[in-house]
Every structure is written in C-alpha cells, then in structure tokens.
Length: 428
Image 1 (tube, rainbow, N blue to C red):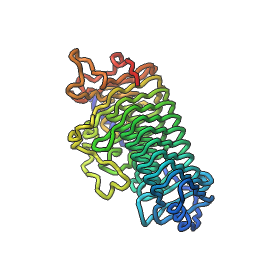
Image 2: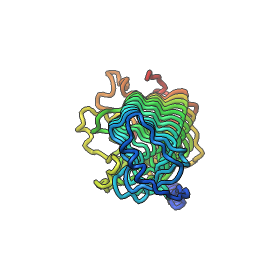
Image 3: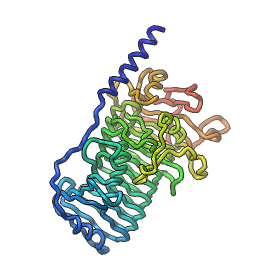
Image 4: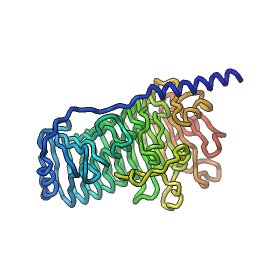
C-alpha cells in the first residue's frame, strides 16, 4: 500500500513539474509596413476573369478583408512567401484576411498572410482552388486570441494545398472542410492546435507533409450537422512528430478536447487508409481512432460552453445532441493502418489528460502507438460476434507496434494490447 502511494505521488509530482516547465512558442518576424491598402483592395474587387493580381515585394498592412467574389480563372501571385507579406494586425473590418467565394479555378501563390481576426484565408463554394507556396501565420506567442484557421477552404471541389506553411492557428493551420477531391501535399504545419485537418471531406489525399510542435499533428474528423460526410481518405508518406504543444484552443470547441501529444486522431470517419508515415515522439498517443461519443468524456472538465462570439471563422463547438442527425454515423469504421514507422523517446505519458492515468493503470505506463476506443453501435457485430466489415479497424505490418483497444463502452473491462485480432486487411 505504501509503495502504491509513493508511486502515485511520484506520478503527480512529474505531472506538476512538466506543467511548470511548459513554454509557449512564438513567431516574431521583423516587419516594416508599406501603405498600398487601397490599391490592392481595388485589384481584388475589380480583377476580371482570367486576370492576374501581381503583388509586389514588401510588408503591407490592411484594416479590412481582401474580398473576391464570383471570379473565374484568376491568379493572385506574390514575390515569395517571405517577401510579400499581407498583414491584418489590428484589423477593423471583416473577420478574414482574404475571403474568396463562388469562384472557379482560383490560384493563390507565393505570398504570406498574417494576423487576421478570424481565418487568414477563407475560400467557400469554389470549384478548383490552389494554394501554392503560401504562408499563413499569427505573430507573437501562440494564444487563444489567434484566429481559428490558417487555410480554410470549405464546401469546395478540387482543392490543392501544396508547399505551404501554417503557424499559430487556434484551431487548425491547414484545414479542408465539407469538400470533395482534395490533395494536401508537401506542406509544413507547426505551433497550431491542429496542424492539418480534413473534416467531413471525401476523396482526400494527404501526403508528403511535416506536422510538428502542434497539439495534434493530423486530424481526420467527421462531425454531425454538416452538409456532407467524410470518406475515402489516404494519409501516407508524412512525417508527424513531436506534437506536444499545450492546447490553446477556445474552450468548448472540438479541437480544445484534443490532448497534447496526439500524433494522428481519426474521429468517426469511414474508409481511411494510413500508411508509410513516420509517427514519432508523442506524449499521449501516436494514432487514436475514436467515436464522437468519446468527445463528451474528453470534455467533462470543460464546464464552459463556447461563447457565440468565439465562433468567428466557423469554429465548431461540441454537439451533445449529435444523435439527432440521422444521417451521421458517430463511429469510426474501415480504418486500415499499415506499414508505418512508430517511434517514441518518451518513457512516461503526459498526465494533462485522463489518458496518461489510463496508460499508467492499464498499459504499464507505455504510450500506445495506436489506440482504438472499441466503441461500436448496437448492431456493430454479426451473429457470430465478429465486428462487421463497415466498422473494422485493421493494424498490420507496423513493426513492434503497441496497439490497445480500450473497450471504453464497458469501463475498460476488456482492455487489451493484443493486436492479433486486428491484424486484418481492408481494401480502401
């Protein structure tokens, strides 16, 4: 009994010391602003179809959003992401830095957008949007006051985000929502709550990216109450490492529930294949596969609801009434994780969430590489007691993987680290 008390005390001391030593990163580039606000505002409004907006080299400060609506085949081009800087620090009108809607074949390339009140770049209802070599950032120390999304294409078709950089978003740095035919490749995302996020999107490829020093590296989410649902997502050839940043998301938002030290989180999405990734050095889990109901448990300690004025930029709050959406499936299914490399330099998990204590009690303090909550709907098993095909989770060819199935619906009664029953194949 005494040794158990000592052990508990040591764990609590470690948690306190870890919290005390945590620091917030910052991004503090030097800026000398030039005044070209009216000229650039006018170009965005008056550009004709098939036109090109050439942004000069320099640092430019704006008091309001740059808006483009209903344009076709337009390119906005700067002189380089570290040479052409569009800053919205102290913005007085609008929530976004750049706001594009109802477009066709729009290309944004070779410039940076900083410090918008809401989203740095929002694109909606657009067919064919390309972001290429664009940097989005919030300057200074990371903060809940930072805008929600760096890149925010939503309800779009044919989205390409490549060779871009995202820093400091209080929700997601690189985000795609409710969109079809998406490619997110060869980008860097760091110092965000979520580095990269695909939400309620279909036919998505995420590859060649580096996500590091975020709270969660890469999220694949399906949420209730939206226009469409996620499916057929491939995540491969990414380097997802060291995502242990303290969560600075808005209380009550979905991402505020993500524990620091989450490499990949797959939430209630179907048909996801994850392979050939490096997932390294996370304090909570390398990859977590969870159902929407788990969010209620993760949010138990968040007694505050997200205030309405915090929903700027489309930030999604927790929805305890998610079962009312009859078209929504809150369970993850057909998840195939194979041929990845998992590494971890941490001996002890983070105790900033209940998962750390769960790993201490159930998993010998080992931080799992892959964790599945084990939740299934009432009809999730066939007459032989086997998980139905549409709800299967398969983990294969990942050397020395530490896999755990929580059995969260039964108070962890059948918690297991035996991957044998999950070494299956899926065709996605």
